[in-house]
Image 1 (cartoon, one colour):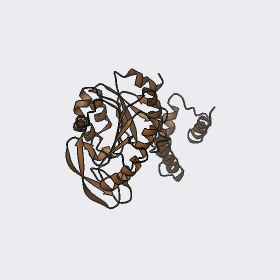
Image 2: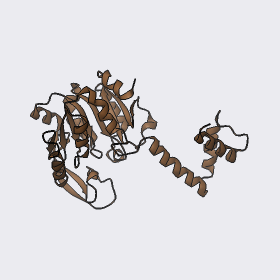
Image 3: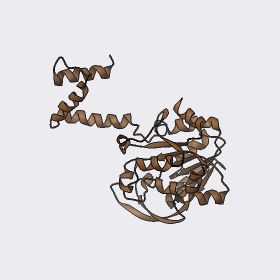
Length: 290
């Protein structure tokens, strides 16, 4: 018996009696009985532990080296990607990581906040010719969008106010992805990574033509609490991408769990999901191990 199974068995005996079993509905009964004691300090502590455990179990982690983002790049390396987009590049950490992991790829990095773009441009100089730093973001159309920029954390810039603290409004230049591809003579994107604090759906809308024509092979996008505010849910991502021939799955440290949408997946834990064109079975196999 594992340590966790032994702990649950001990908890069941202490809560339900010496003859308690976890099978045949016993686990559900244990949970209900503990819930009835919700005002007790030890039960409150256990509930806090369970919430933290669930977030860890569902991969609530923004560290590239732990959460599967670095693993994803390594899995894609044998396919020799040539064109990678980093939308919401911030200061360029992911762009640099991608450029090192994918030595034949050119990284098109987009960051619309002027001060943050300056840091991105400096990062791009560390790998001359590998990272093209753009002083604009991507959205559903060309133009300007007001972003809320937080003074103490450049990663929290968003189309909506998501976080505590003082923020300032900054008008930022935007391009539609289809227009940028046409301007740059880009026919296909091997990997499109989107991290824009709740505006992911606007970025996808700007690639309407490329998505309809199957010219983006892999998409990594963020989903989380920002989607409560923007009201573009995980269900909407599934419907949008599946209707255009993509399989959608959640990114874990060493796999992508491709799955049909279910209501219980709408947990706002995130952080990253991956969509692969259904026609690219070779890519899907690399990411699932199947």
